[in-house]
Amino acid sequence: MKPVLQAVRVRKRFGDHQALDGVDLSVEEGEVVVVIGPSGSGKSTLVRCLHQLTPIDGGAMYLDGELLGHAVHRGHLRPLSEAAITKQRRRMGMVFQQFHLFPHWTVLRNLTEAPVRVHGVAPAAARDRALALLERVGLGERANAYPRQLSGGQQQRVAIARALATDPRIMFFDEPTSALDPELVDEVLAVMRDLARSGMTMVVVTHEMAFAREVADRCVFMDRGRIVETGPPAQIFGAPRSPRLRAFLSRFTGPSEVPLDA
Image (cartoon, rainbow, N blue to C red; front, side, top):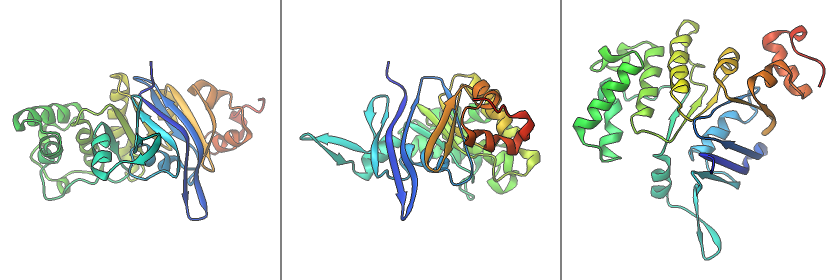
């Protein structure tokens, strides 16, 4: 069986900065992959490239075996049109640090607009799904509210529901709690835990180490645009192999709690 998502030797440069330097990553059906690492390590760039919001400079990416961003034409790779890339992107959901809700639309319209206008879902069916998703994220009673009437945590839960409204094949989360006040973080993480338990395929960039230990099937540690170490949470947090990962984790656990043996 092919992985749901695969990145092969993906590279991305911004000027003199090599943001991604030959990244290989596979994500299996129903797997929760949590990407950790210091600021500037390439975590957010990776998920933005996977979602095709940022074009890559080299390598290849596949969704269910389909090449993303390019097509083979007469033995050569040809970039897809923006319309074709947008069509591919519809099969993936993305939740950003900021909520990006339309402030002049109700919560319900924020959820139904893309399914109706872009995916051709019947308005009644889109409304029913949106209401069910709002119940799932604990906001069933706020369907007719406007974003300004919601807390940051509630807005992020709406953003998650909106990403789910198009029934994506895989969900990406780019530090979804980093813009929230500390007391609002748990309500968003609770929704993400529920998604993980339901079998949703997910790639999560986060600084929430406790969440990573609890929810991840596999953790990926990045530094300087490369994947330094990958493995189950028990290995990554309990027996890190690389000195760089041990140094990173010591910021969260204290040096005495990080094993020193390889």
